Amino acid sequence: MSRFLDELRDPWGLLLGATAGGTAWAVSVHPAAAGAVAVAVWLAKTAIATVQGRGGGRSAPAVTAGSEEAYWLERAGSAARGFGELSASMGAGPLAERIALMRPQVDDSTATLERLAEQASLTGAALARFDLDRLRQERTRLTRARKGAREELVHDLDRALASLASQQAVVERLAQTRSQVLARMESSTISIEGLLARLVELSAMTATGALEPTRVLDELADNLEGVRQGLHETEQITRDALDR
View 1 (cartoon, rainbow, N blue to C red):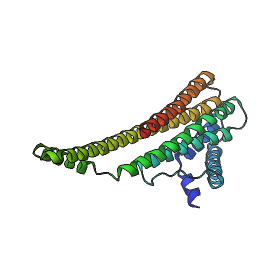
View 2 (cartoon, rainbow, N blue to C red):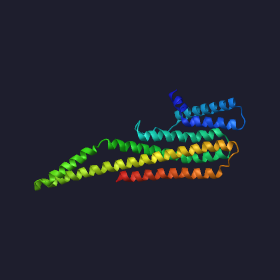
View 3 (cartoon, one colour):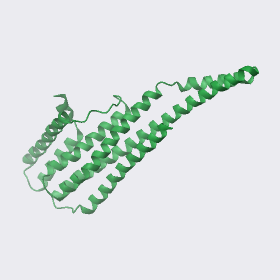
View 4 (tube, rainbow, N blue to C red):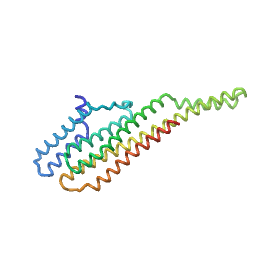
């Protein structure tokens, strides 16, 4: 039941229902009947998403609950589900077929976002093990101590300073990697949401004969491919950075 209630609150379900109701009203369906169409689409979307959520075979990614990466991953997942639900709600037709062709790109982008979210959580957990302020304080203290140290102690102090510098470099590299991953997750998620919103708009306009969407769909597909490739590039860059 909690899954069903979560899906009821999904803004994409409300948007799909409103679009369906608006389209029905635009083609001269009685307002009361148009409202019934909107509610029916909203509930159908919720039921489908609930069943899909229960039956999905993919295990949940290991992402820290309540984290920034979990937030963006949840939003991206909601938008990704909206692609399939929009296509299913439209039935047969050229627009539905084009949207269905975008689904592999959306699925691949979502899978990459899941891996990036796991990476962000791992780097976050690693960063929590370090106290950067303490490292800086110890480095300052040892640097000061080395100036007046006896000759036989200089070598040991240099080794300690080198170790502190290495740890500080690790912390800075992890922090930079996490920031880069989160920035890409944010921009990609918002882009996917924007693409879905445009597709919902196109479905309503096409239903009333107000638009021939071929050119716009080509542009949206290109934008989606750009999002997908950008995610893969970020994944490779951050993997290389962490492997150093």
